[in-house]
Length: 317
Ligand code: AMP
Ligand code: ZN
Image (tube, rainbow, N blue to C red; front, side, top):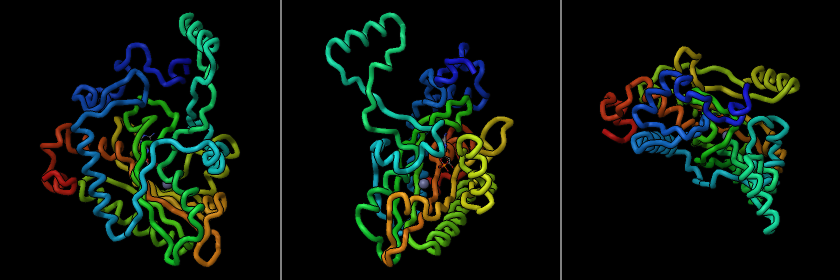
């Protein structure tokens, strides 16, 4: 891969390399290219569909009595380290750096800039890291509150997430939104929660008249050791995905995931059940952009002309 591509910049010639679906989305103004792969602006039409999806997910989860929590798309470096994300997915992480120097340092930075040299080593880590998954910021918060209620707890989160995986596939973005319900409690509670949401996820996709399949999956753990962890995650069926065909000539795309973390996060942050046992956790994640793209792929680029049942599900009938 050349240096520009690994930095996520569009190849010379830009959209000539892009798959036809991405071209069509850009042509219709639904996604606005920035010159960086996987980093797009979204049009009002695109956003309205995303809002409709979020509304449908809220309606589907009304009986969960979830606590709604919204965080900015970043978390503290300490909490990020505690999450062990760097042990599992160092290739996806993104950190925020800022200039913290004096005027001499500023002159050095500007000289580098003027000479077309790398200036980023003139910055320091800010102590802030981009959120890699919408549920991550809640675990330290829940831990600080003390033991969970007797019946466990469900939290509703929505966040832009960063993953450094530049791609020409419009479904693989570097910044995208995940809506999640996260369940914390006993193992039985989490297993039942995940089963319920696997059914509800399929119910939503069917109401949206999208072709779907559900399959066991694994996260992209890094390196040779990661392969062993991924195999074990599959064997234990800890992750399922709901897949929908979206991209040209590519296998179907994961648009929702249903995850059982066992006591991984509970142990890392010392989250306790009411009886003092380490909490188990699980989450259902809806990829907002991927679901919007699936709808655009299957029902056409003009949501005003989508089937009335689909529009009704999105609250736009
Ligand atoms: P995960 O945490 O990997 O299970 O992701 C949860 C959901 O987020 C996936 O099912 C996708 O719908 C969405 N997602 C994950 N990675 C990306 C990406 N690079 N671009 C857009 N959506 C994504
Ligand atoms: Zn999650």
